[in-house]
Image (cartoon, rainbow over all chains, first blue to last red; front, side, top):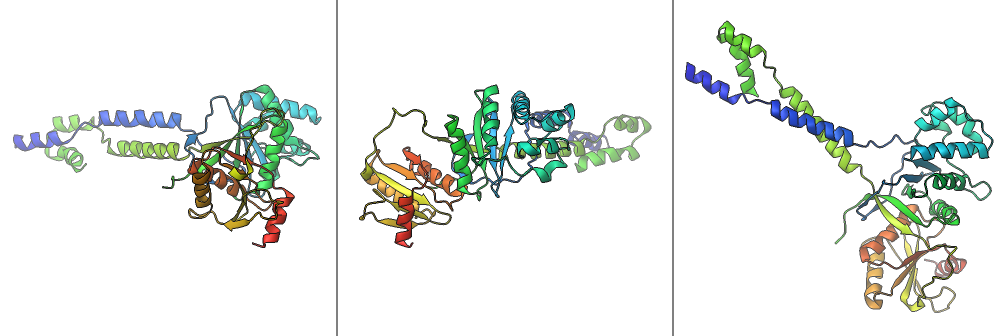
Length: 199
Length: 172
């Protein structure tokens, strides 16, 4: 009898240590994980063999181009975003309330002409999705140029990333490059999805 | 895991003392399972969602001094269209300029670039002029071909009417 019992005890191992390690790792990964922000538009970037990760040290201004050719802007520099809103609002004579500012900071993306700014920002980001159709970039009212200009003004080290949908038209991209080159921005990071290197 | 159950089941057979001792030990298996499941999830999501970038440097428009001369005989102009790539060597207005068409496969434009680069050497320059119908993907593909063939000299330009006329004339 005692022999059998001793054997039983020996196989039940103490899982506390394992559990500790598991949860330590879990905490680490949860804290370091960066979730993809919810996108108002789905963008499938083309693939390339490049292996360079996006360097987000100094802040990144992402210009997205959707399949239909809409141009959207996102920035991970919160101070810069606030500055951009204030400057754009005063340029186009839009009075910004605290509520509008809150909605602006809560949404990840800017994708509306300045004329619709008041309407969009008075809605919750989730409700305003239908109104997000893109920033005008045509030569008559190139608002992208102002947005980028103000972003660069608040943070000169800001990197410009372009995330185009693989099936978006090249001329939209060419217009964006032209707009930025006019402001003497000549280095772009093209966001792509990784792909295996061919032999 | 079955062992843990059996030790828990030992309550029945054992005396009161034993059952009291056992009750303080909780079965941590589901907790550990859940922990590792979440770890796996976070590990996979963090590594897979990482986007990569390719840097594109455009020339400074305000700087007119710094130009590097390029021999026409050492350049290849590629004109990516949505499903095919046109390419020619030399000047589009020349009557002798021959335009050819190929595709985006491994044996298509990549072979053309690699062969020409081998023939010409380090001074080989690629001029990319996407058509109006080209997609963003086509341009990235061309930049990618440059990276694959190890070609560091390339220029991204707007398409000119001469090249368009050349394509039209060739009827390809």
